Image (cartoon, rainbow, N blue to C red; front, side):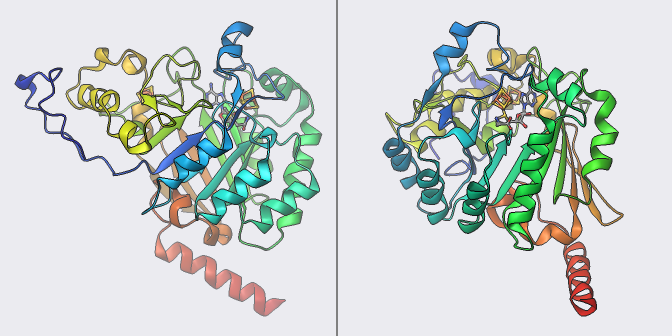
Length: 359
Ligand SMILES: C[S@@+](CC[C@H](N)C(=O)[O-])C[C@H]1O[C@@H](n2cnc3c(N)ncnc32)[C@H](O)[C@@H]1O
Ligand code: SF4
Ligand code: SF4
């Protein structure tokens, strides 16, 4: 880890002792294709009214350049989300790109709107053992889907979830989930969504919306702390440029470019070092993108085991994990989550054995 504590932008009166930073980021968000077949109203890119601004970030990543980036992970493989502000099922040469990542031992975790998931693609995801597929539904009725995601094709998206579940069957992978981003237009369906999907999919994810530079529904702990995002996650846009945080869809920040230098150079470079220094010394206003954001509060999880579920809650997310499908949630797919408690895993195993005896 490069020592920046004597850099000219460091004020010695803070007596800054830099927090440790991992050699390489544990999570990589890679925008292979900044293109989408939807225009969800809350989306920080596709929800914008200014087509020029959207056009300025649209694009497709060069596959060879992305491979050279992944080649730099020699010791520990990261968890990769293959989209930031794109629909991953629209990535050109998708089978080649995903197959290549799985061969490297990367945990591949997708968020998708599900609209173009064919039977064939579902089978391919099972064959290569994609680790996780999370369908963004945000609604239980076509009317609300239209409000949030601009289309009323809920039946089509739900059919994609059931297609994925059927094709996967009893196999461990992919782990299959549905997601709901809580906002004013769908808040009334929050509980109905949980009731509809618990017991059907492996995991139900409820999250709060980011809007106008912050998460209005976040309940923050009293004391602000350095944001975990800048110690764990590297968001790479389609041109290799790296942004401070995935919330920066329209490139307000610029941390460097991994296609021009290297992942380690950017991760331990001056821009990330400065952001971490200002966070660690509580000079929040020196990182304008973070100044008004409460995303730093998202990391503390509480845990409850109830009705066959392992429920994990943080100020940003609630995850309802089906205990008897927990065996597929392990290794680098955990993406910074602590592993499920041993006694919960044992409970799941006992249930599987009992089911096998009954069968
Ligand atoms: C940006 S999308 C990209 C992947 C894919 N197109 C999809 O919709 O799942 C990733 C996730 O971010 C969520 N999302 C979009 N805008 C958001 C916002 N303003 N605040 C919180 N989550 C948001 C989406 O609902 C989705 O679950
Ligand atoms: S489907 Fe995903 S990327 Fe596309 S507009 Fe909606 S949230 Fe944004
Ligand atoms: S404080 Fe907000 S904007 Fe800054 S890194 Fe954390 S989540 Fe991202």
